Length: 305
Ligand code: GRG
Image 1: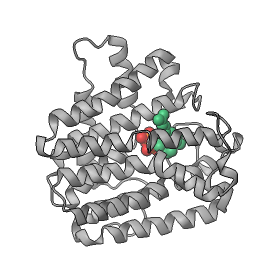
Image 2: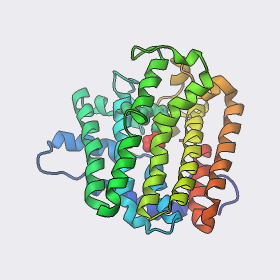
Image 3: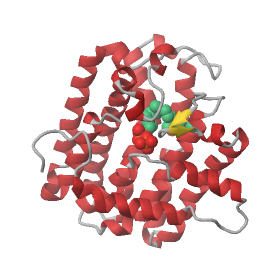
């Protein structure tokens, strides 16, 4: 284990990362009936340089519960497909209206809006198709349930809707005025946290985790999900556009409710640090096998991109 918190992932993550990249490439290769332009747009967004945080979490959770992490690759890709769809749709003019993502033009800028919408739609179904086909039948139903629930109206989509409402859009009542910190937590628990928590659960299920072990993984996921969002808010304030590959200072420009706006930068970073310690405590039960999860938790708050 490295002594200090890593700002880049250590070299021993390389085998996981390579396996993820190869699998993403394979799963997004052309299929009959999918127009070339749609395949190109899907591959453009999926194969763009992302951190692969969520697929890594799937593999590391599987490893922590003594599973064979290679068997969790379909679930790792499925969760990345959902994540990428959410980024493509979030960037659309009707949502965040962004022109840069992962250091490149956003999908609707590179292609067009209809293509970007369809790429996102295609990725949602590719996620479910991948789980149904490539996870053993005894575990596929649980995996589909976990991922579809996390990506659904009560979590990812609901959190996104409330986030828009907080900006006074989506016909929004300004709930944020009543208890801003609780409102912010509730949005991010759904919008960011749910998919991160689901990643841990998917890895656990594929690895054959007991119910107790699934609970510890979920606790780790909830803590780093929130820490990740806090770090993201901080990077919007003090991050560098070249390192991040996306526009910064958007939140403050839009007057968005964020952790730094409520707790200040130092207070936000302190809270993120505490959450990382909570996450590491939750997986201490896995002893040496939690080593990579601990490294990744540190990376989540120390990253500069
Ligand atoms: C459209 C239903 C729907 C939801 C969109 C993903 C999302 C919800 C919004 C993106 C805006 C945002 C800042 C979300 C919070 C943090 C987040 C998900 C950041 C992006 O994830 P990273 O940093 O991205 O892991 P990479 O590109 O590295 O995979």
